[in-house]
Amino acid sequence: MRQHVNPLSEHYKKFEPIPPMELLFGMPNLPLHIDIGCASGDFLFELANQNTSWNYLGIEIREKLALNAQSKLKNSDLTNLFFLYGNVDNLISEYLNRFSRKPFADSISLNFPDPWFKKKHHKRRVLQPDFLIRISEIMKESAHLYIKSDVKDLFDYMNLVISESLIFEKLESENNYMFNPQNIKTEREIYVSSKKLPIYKQIYQRKF
Image (cartoon, rainbow, N blue to C red; front, side):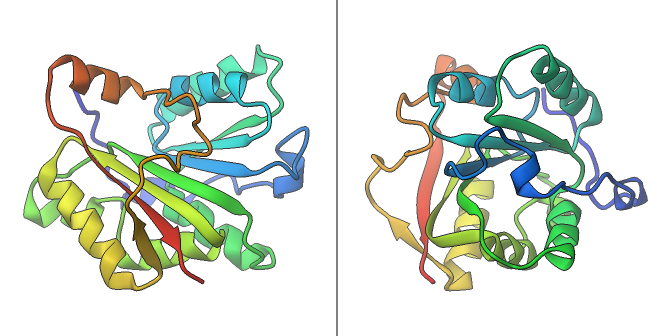
């Protein structure tokens, strides 16, 4: 069951800012993948354990899940993984205002975000045109953007927002999961696959 959290709530306008990237990881010069809406972080823990040549940053708006991930990380030896709590749009906007706008992300994923089915709630969907521009500003040239959903309407909406931006181009090959060469699946993907339901996915590349 999806846990709804209103990202537009005043509650999320107060947050702990993102530290400088060089302070987050043991080897900050490694390629960086950002997972937006990382839940309890199990997907990223597995990725970080198996791919020590990448850094992984998870961002989660649901406080309990984010705190659980942070607590689990403190009890591990991983130095290529970090978790942040808050509204990702607010976090990235503040970061861009505070630091130089040198792109630092090699790839970003949006895996099974909240669909917010009611039309009046579509403004709560994480991927909005303005937000897409902001995340493009932290992405390196040719960086990859990955989207996945089990909701066709949401997938079509995200695909339209990205396509109309003219910042990204579609990649037809599915062999471009460089941050995830083992094809590790999220909890939601495992669940949806077990029910034999369709999963819609697309990879995009930043053009400039």
